[in-house]
Length: 330
Picture (cartoon, helix red, strand yellow):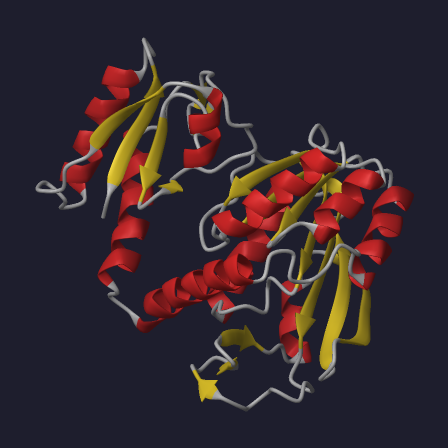
């Protein structure tokens, strides 16, 4: 694992952050693992390295606490169990390091599959910039109408890719936080947003949905995820993710997602990875039975499960719309 503590010059949190990082490394059994401290010199360097404010902890080039802040030579605010603070707690650092260490060491097949999928998507986006084209998906157009009718103003998109749907939400007047685990895709999204004058409405964050969402409780009006939940995620990871979506949505908030289901032509084809996950053409997909959709809606208000087709196969999907009850507390 390569670990960097990235700061701006004269940051008052540099030493305490370094002390906490060293303690966290020791606590999780990584006493022999070093880290370097990097001082950011300008805005361009900050954007290139994914700097989210001082201090930022990078693990193998990824922001360990990727959040909605824009890159820049600024201080950073973390949401901690004790409230907002200028640096993460030792406990938060332990959790981030432990998760990265499990993946890096390849202790289980799922960790290896997840990393293989990350690399595959990085390569695919690099080889095929804007691979899905500039037009928004049909589910995104539908979601924008649903969100507007619900009075939403801000949208979190999970698995945004190169941004065709995030940019649509921005054009429709929403403020958007677009997340993805592919830095290549998000680079393309930011470039397009600037070219189309939408940079003020779109913020990006590198984020793996196996990790907690980088947002406070009840902080967004709407969440959108097109074919993100049906990636190489276990059923347990999907339940955890939907729990995180519920946590960050305000009461009455709307979640629209799409997934490929077990009626799809690729279900049961290719390399089986258990838990209804099959890999075909390098892409691993978790195909959803209807009972999983219903289970994920427990405690929500389920408005719609709409069957549709997309692409040349065609892929067979469900579009699901559910909301947090208005009186929900979490």
